[in-house]
Length: 264
Image 1 (spheres, rainbow, N blue to C red):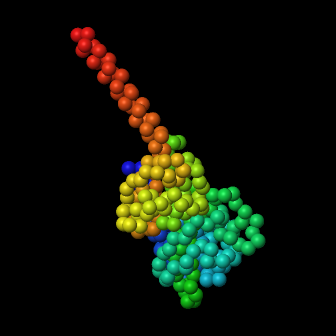
Image 2: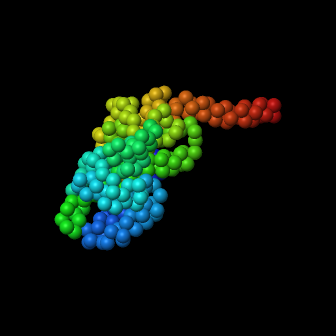
């Protein structure tokens, strides 16, 4: 149930960002004035609280417009965001270790960020009115996804994460032994969740190491129309202790009832 809730939230967040980029691309392709486009980018970021930024770039990596003033007019290597999508299509990039596009500019002081801090770029290809190809990008904030995961789990012993099929962590709770951007081999074991997804299982469970090295009891669920997976796990030792405590709580009243019946 927890995996299903987290999968639904991640899918809805990506769908909302995709719809927003489609609308912005239509406005940009129709030749909207720069001030209008700039205002729409700002409104999009404000309305979608899980975004770090929204920007329009040309094929040379020059930021033409951005919701974040620090990103405007910077020059980056567009390939760092991921594969350039076809016209009218979307692609999702991997974890990028930077707070914003300004952090990707050569020699930028903002390029130095703590481990685990970054964004996930959602890209949409378009063509400007003068015929030049361009790129709209929405920068998804992994911390916003991880915060929702934490609130949903509501258990410090549990851990959850959003991962790609290569085992790269895109968003992960504090209860895991790893941070966003790391790649975990344990999730790709033949009995692990990612191997199960590759063989066609959209959801299921597994036992063994996962986000943590100790044996876990976990559940996974693949996202709709995205090559991503949500995993949720709890240490097997914790679950065993809970089960024994429950049996003990149920057993003591039963013993009392049996003794009363014996005396009667």
